[in-house]
Image (tube, one colour):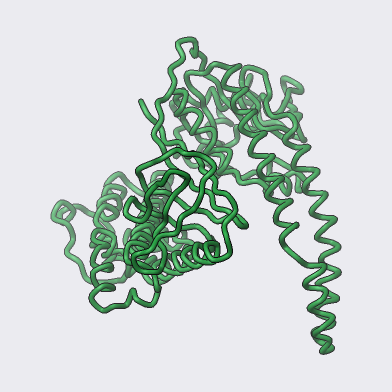
Length: 462
């Protein structure tokens, strides 16, 4: 990989009231367009439109349906395009998860899996099966002994399982502008507004200029401009190690080399959890008092409590400040890990799908849940791509429950793993070694069922 996308930011000076009102209106309407598209087309009947979303745009233009948004055409067309792209990605993820589930389903034959994969590749066939409509069985499967009723029901069941809720955009003040909606000037940028033929001049703190689709984000009385740029990746001749990493009990990662990184992560999460528990306890009392006054008809007192004691500005600011601090610490720790370990390859579990219920006590899970596991994964993948480090995912089943030396099942308590044969060892370091060893395990693939994994490990321990 020679290039990678990196997002850089531009910042504006404070906006006047009229400009601020205009960009907020555009952001709100941009959101409304996307949410309408999500609600209208993200369902099963929207599948046939995925291959040609332009017909929605043409219909909106012809019927003048788009006029209700009160936006220049380029804005609502951009919002429509983004929403349909997100819907298409969602269906791609659903199909991917169905394929993964089929791989671990021992009741399916190779022919069964071949049929399901073939159906998933055709939006027309997939849609007909989901809507119980008649379809011609593909010629390559007409002479194959398959239980089509069972397989089609399985496709429907897996789709229901992974479909999830309708997407929804909560970003009131975020919208995109393509190159036809803005132009740079000497001290800032001009953005197309809702008034025909006019643009909003916005002063920026730098004089950089870009020529791609930008994301505008309104923050209080200013705007941030997010610009995706392609940058060259790095090559390190001295990066020769292959390491396994595991999410730590009290820190970010434990590595098979014996080192740990991000030792203070638990402190960050603990302090914030305790702070929020204390604040939310107080706020709950005020909410109860507010509801009491509403029931008694004391609207004036209720509104006073709502305004003076239940405001969100400071509350949200402190949460954002904490999240940014944790983000910064995670990135510093990942940089340290890469600089120290000098890996050419990293072996790991798929962090945002690993179930930590049996691994950590409730108090620790509550702290971890305050952070997005997907963020850790996204930043680690980004830094690997940027440094040309290969990363692979392995089957996570029982990596933290067996001894890395003798393969015996043991007991984990906190950060201590006790093997009945080998004694005590650091639990996360033990798991990280198991993760590294599983890379070359020919019996346990990424999609091997966890029950089968357990049998394999039990046979090895005998």
